[in-house]
Length: 153
Image 1 (cartoon, rainbow, N blue to C red):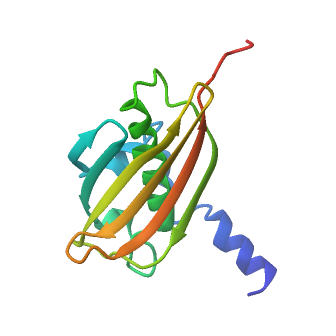
Image 2 (image 1 turned 90 degrees about the vertical axis):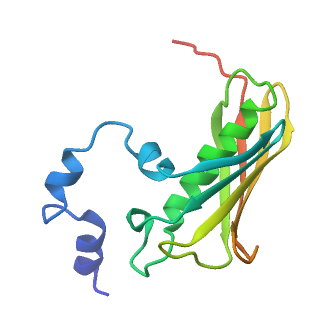
């Protein structure tokens, strides 16, 4: 791909989506990703959720978008920190996701978040995505958060 084509691919200025994107409310990403997410089980240090993959979260290959998966690692991973009695979920220090398989529109997936460590300053959680019907792992994430937040402002 030539450089101008790459530039057009990344910038996405104008076009059919511009008015739709500009009309979105602030902080729209979490509600867009979380809509339809159900908690099936919750206990200290563990949350098990289910989600039927909606068309709005698909990539151009018609499978669950990697960015949506990463956002769910952030959201569900942060939630499990609260189950350990933490007063805040802090700020992200590191997040990674390994994509192992695909999930498609209408397919039900499980998302399991576990607190690996919740201390005074840091929390580390794991988040695993599985096909509900087969248990096959589709993605694994790990999220590290800094909890000891204080403002200098």
